[in-house]
Length: 510
Image 1 (cartoon, rainbow, N blue to C red):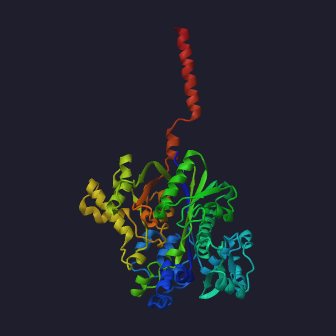
Image 2 (cartoon, rainbow, N blue to C red; image 1 turned 120 degrees about the vertical axis):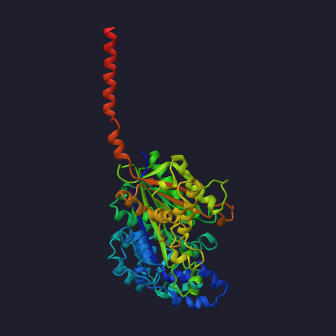
Image 3 (tube, one colour; image 1 turned 90 degrees about the horizontal axis):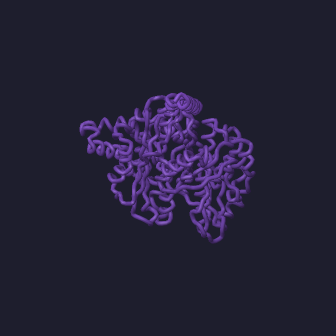
């Protein structure tokens, strides 16, 4: 039987100081043009935590409003807010910067994260009230160091500074004197990814009442690389995150595929569970500091705030079929092959054409979850409405195949598509943001199925000019229906015994 999706979580971490000091757009500008007007102006365009929590797409990401609810807010959204918005949502939370910095130290097992005493004291009190931070995790937080020690590590020991409210309150030390793969810069990136991944796993466990001891395997599918000079991307984020999250019976490994990584990882997880290798697999990923403020220059030119001020994370639990939760269909997987071609049309065609294997029309899929980028971020940067562009291509393909009339194209994008709401964190928007909503919509009977489409830009690694992508369908569970219509094992034995008895009786009468 097919594997099922038993739960999903989505988290954000608001990190305004990391936008300034760790986002590659800003660090590159500081190197190339340190006196630029952009660097002088950016601080005036940073939002506060309350604004980030009330921002409609962020509330959608953590599950407090649905994509349909979000579509009721007229674009642009940066000047809109949801009153009485909560930092905690149906699927996760939005963590403030000070708490997240301390979570980074909780995830550090090599004494690389140094934090100032007073900062730790104040933040520890906040974290002690957090519903997911137990005594075990809180016990991993050190008392802190004197400010002079941290300043010396930054100025003399090549440590990466950590700021809060523009004040130096900590640093990440380098893990090796000359290995660039263990530099302070890389270690900060990796610890940020690890901490946001751990936060997503903690939320998954809490939101779905998961028994930690029942998790067998974890697959990390972020875009960072964990290793040293002898194996730059050897891993293993997955097992490192499982350790901090208390998954004592789990092992794990990392899957990488740029933005398509999560879709690849979910297919592999579903296959591992269906094969019987593991019963419960978590697919998860943390966020990327590099992409903070990525489109900041365009946003500021248009008088907007820096909208890429959050790290993203998610976790999805894949388990054995329980007859209830939505199934992942492994018998028709869409894939972008080596010989497919890299035009956007060729990529979409290759991923959607998997429907041919099932004898399905494009309109037979209720919802398509593509690159669910927040258009509030991408449109001012000149990239347009990314989800809408994808839906138009799928709709055009439906017209070409004869599944719909050309005049139905606009209705197709509305009926089978969604407005985007995910932060531009590379792998985070690629197909997976809808899985939590999609699972619930299927359970509630609102839709019968959905296609998850993950796409990736392999040419970014300078190893190939190829594009990448995979897709799969999740659908309502058929387990109960099959159970009701199929014959039980005991009944089969009874029928065989009766047949043998009749056969023997016939031989005797003959």
